Image (cartoon, helix red, strand yellow):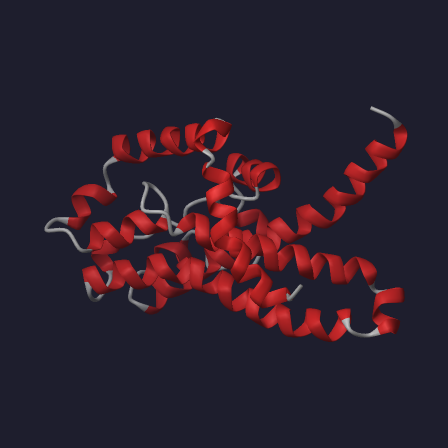
Length: 212
């Protein structure tokens, strides 16, 4: 690998890593905040009701998000039995993470469009414009990925909330373990085209936010 390629990779990481940290932090904070408002104080007691990225980072999920553009943060601890309404609470808490990412993307999109159309901003604030663009993209990818109904992703909890005994699935460690393995296989083996499918879904949403 020659020097220009190394410099290019480092320049990309300087933008990508902060964008990943922002998207993951907002996602996990969304879960923690929703749970807290619905009656569960577990996340707050464990320091997860925070915008500090270090409290929400899962190393494997972070690496996956950097490499594949799809990943996850450290799961926010939620005592679903403490929620005022179990089924409704499960759905709201599960949706809060992806919804937070979409709201972040929407808010940043306004800033991005203003800066990207300003010649002075383009000349002097190129890094921040790129950071905002990456954050929007990763926020959308993170939201879409987590809505997949495969344990332990948020989408699975929404499905479980509609079953006869939702807690049975939520606290099934084996189900979550094999779900993770299944996700890794889908992402790691190109023949399935899983990452391409997710990008096709996320693409139009990203285009809506950043134009182009």
